[in-house]
Image 1: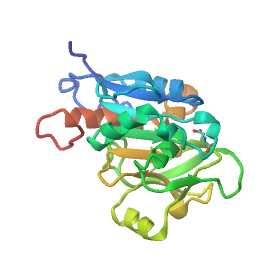
Image 2: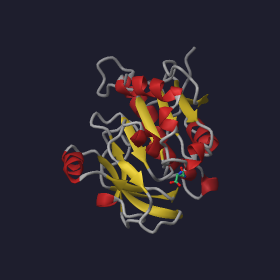
Image 3: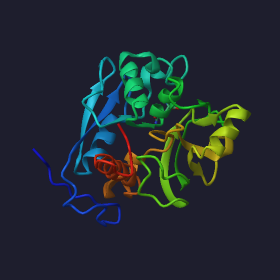
Length: 256
Ligand SMILES: NC(=O)CC[C@H](N)C(=O)O
């Protein structure tokens, strides 16, 4: 069965003609013990018709049925040991590795970013904020890279405000690899005003291929008018647009 998709961006402009939108894509939202942003993420994804969110537990053995995977925020395993470290060693992460290395679109939000870094799917690590305090605040950002499936509908250099809510968000990478990260244009978003001491004001990065994105700010918390703005929704409409483009034979984007 095909689903007719109304595909709009945050300014209610049509992204793609609905005539070409004849697919629907399954998005896995991973849940670990201690995850707490999965339902907000589910709600945000379900606002984009054409994306079908599903919660997937940490014991899942395969992510084959899905077109994209989101690792949401929270306090997986109580942030014990190092935040994200225990979740990174659960069965579903083996499946996520296969999915990601096969070119699948993967987004880690906040604790999700910490988990992806701990799993070695993204370079670097998130350390405790320089203030040593939990920071919950709206944060102005600049989107630098639009090559990822989650930022494809932004214009490079566009500005947006998204909330952060973390104790361990200070991005760190050794000097040599940080230079490479910059050279390879893997910095996807920077803070306009650094809230946590992250190196080079880094708020979001991708892997070299661009299919895996980790971001500390929470787009799902700005995805409906009730949450104050819909600025974050472009992350999810970008995903739909990229999946549609990748489903066209010989199209411009190749996901898996
Ligand atoms: N919002 C979240 O995902 C919390 C992130 C994390 N566990 C921290 O406090 O650093």
